Image (cartoon, rainbow, N blue to C red; front, side, top):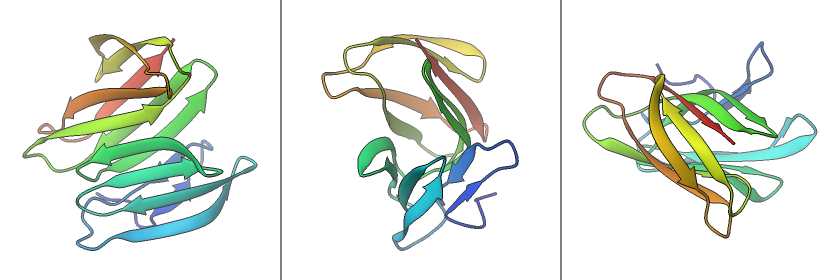
Length: 136
């Protein structure tokens, strides 16, 4: 089920955002979260999250993200989207750093960020919502 609002803070202080069921692009700007201003754009083709104007998350096609938590060691979240194709997810982390990626508890290997700190993964959402953990 997609989030009822385009972006919200959960009871555990994590962030949920995006709505892959929207036919037309929708966005929320200047959403206050943890001392930052968040911006989300989402619809069926893409979901994008920015923090203070800086890249945080993008998926193609669009997704709904639950319980997104950033830490000094990486990020973790649950993601849901269309079940008929793989989703390409890009997250903004430290540049030139290697991270361990786990998807639904299975080791997806080590991935190194590029010079702009972007890390790309692909996720199969055919079984529904999946948990992604990306740690140094």
